[in-house]
Length: 599
Image (cartoon, rainbow, N blue to C red):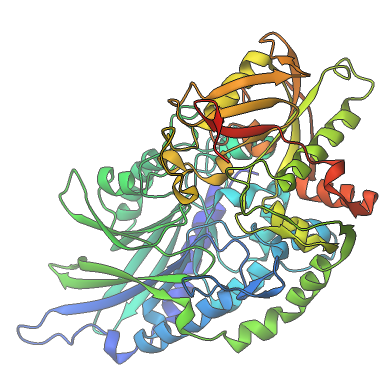
């Protein structure tokens, strides 16, 4: 639905006025200095920010059914963030603070999946989304749209938006027909200052252009996502002309200047630093999307020479970014004198009992759901070595995908074609234990909400696909010692962008240069024929171009569905009753060096 611009501007103006009244009484520490002989008027503003919360309300690991723990001692969850926010507000005065988020809110845990799919918020009389309830209670002022906001479709996103007491911002999320903002582009908050004019703070929200690829099925023809730099250059001057004394950008875009989708889009995926460098008039940027911790990054604007401060808090509510902005009033106007940022660690505080009480019932329902037993495993299956050895646990994914696609194409002109499938080792710690198998065991194997697509590929295209995937391995000469911790992730490629392909047999010779590693590639016992046609069972992320694998995005689509692959795995195991590797495991590939197996 297109944005009604008049209604949006009226709402924004009313919101700003309402906030101004609410913040009329300030804490003494944050007030402008009294106008006296030789004394300047000053104001201190603190902007707090989170990003990539991905449904983490509590410090809880639904996949392990236990408190979350990692080797770094991190803690997760909005309940911890709430405590940090309360501390900052107590110190600075709530009326002198702003709380923002940079997106990826409603996808990522069984909690968010449950309220999108099992007991959906879109149902008549459906529940309030736990993330909306928590963020409303904490008192967020504005949230930028993340790419994962679109994973469950626009209807779910709009319902979530309706349940939030704060705007979801996306200046570069445009209606595909009108090219006007489909979500509010910005939010303005006015801060009252004793003895001086008010301070007007504008927040511009920007989201990721990759949505056009990653959630193509939901957004194509409905929404379009131009580049962050282009839209910031359009909106920042408007915000300044509207009287903004401070401009903060909340951007669901990393700072590296790189893109995972190659040249499939003319827009940079991780462009926050480019925005700071190219667009004048920005004071600070809350960075998201990349899942890295940046306490403070200073970028010089190429046109003005002024410093723009960027900060990205660690994902899953593990950190809270703090921007301390100092303003001075001179010559009839406020100007930003300095900006400094840092991050606070969620592991330094306890849960906020208000948030715990508010969401305990929702949490308990999901814990019960993920602990449902769906089958029995004859042996323990694990992903510990799945990055560099063909692991049966990944074969389970490809087997399920093959079976679903074969059934879907039965009776069609493609029914006689061989079906092959891809899957990635998403997790290094997933385990399906021998004995009872629960939904959470299977969910930990497939942590993303991907759905299944069938594409048509030739043997030559499959070969190119495998060569690209094999670039994941670090070139390692024959005879040298092998350190498995240094064997993978060449050029910083993540594990989820390395694919197994089932139904074939091949070696990956890591002593060879990238592009020449696939050896002894066979199908049905014979050397692969480049002209042979295959049905390729692939997840929607990959099918839409995620990871920039060759050929697959442009290949003919034969079939697709909206049921998650994770759900298909649970259905397959439930139907079997017994999870036995003899029903799905096969050795399709191995690592070699000059023809000699590595393991």
